Length: 109
Image 1 (cartoon, rainbow, N blue to C red):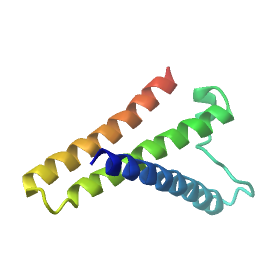
Image 2: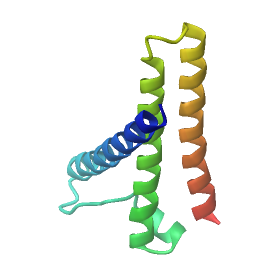
Image 3: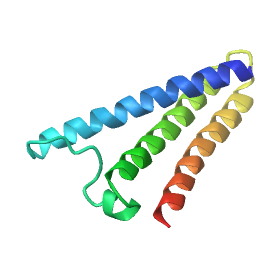
Image 4: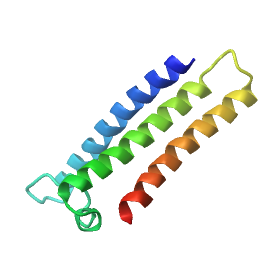
């Protein structure tokens, strides 16, 4: 079970990072800036540089992706009762969101 959770977390983190970069590409294209804007415009000022901003946004995308993927994996367990599936899916999603919030709070200080 733990092996499946770790595998789902790694896959979810990868997908979360990919979706974050895809969203950045779409937003940069829609704003017609003429260049790739990897993060929000005000984020580098808040976190102390562009590299920190990219790492910050990547960490958030990875944590959210991992949390959502593990929640989906838990919700899809056919051998568990519906109550147990809902409980574990909710807990894993909450952990992913709280971890992301912890990164946000930690980097904004």
